[in-house]
Length: 145
Image (cartoon, rainbow, N blue to C red; front, side, top):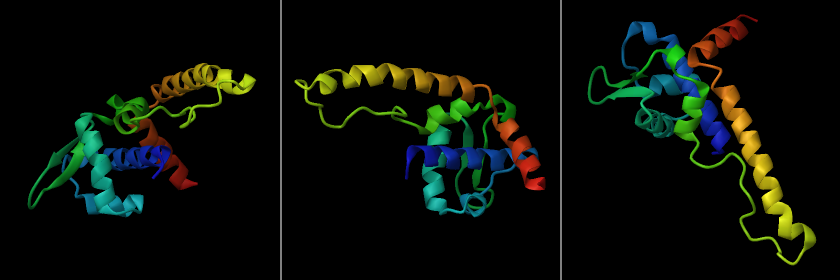
């Protein structure tokens, strides 16, 4: 699955948990998966990354097992989630080395590197401005339309 898709699934998970956070209970992954429309096994991999980043808590075993937010929804930025689930740069350079004797091949990677770095930094600044609470509010508004 694409990095961006994993990120979207992570945001969906956290938004769903935030909506139910007033209940202060742990929710099983199959219940969350029902909203996301994917398998609980796949969700648990993403939830594991979110737990490692301190965004969710897990309770194992029997009745009451599941997941819940580790922080208030307004304290979790979209950047926090991005950093938890995106392990590689958003943009990557060639997987094979371009021809160094070609006029374009020689300089394309340095030329792209600064554009890619600036673009990812702009994205991160934007993601830092939004919280999971904002996504709950926006999702509920969109659902009414």
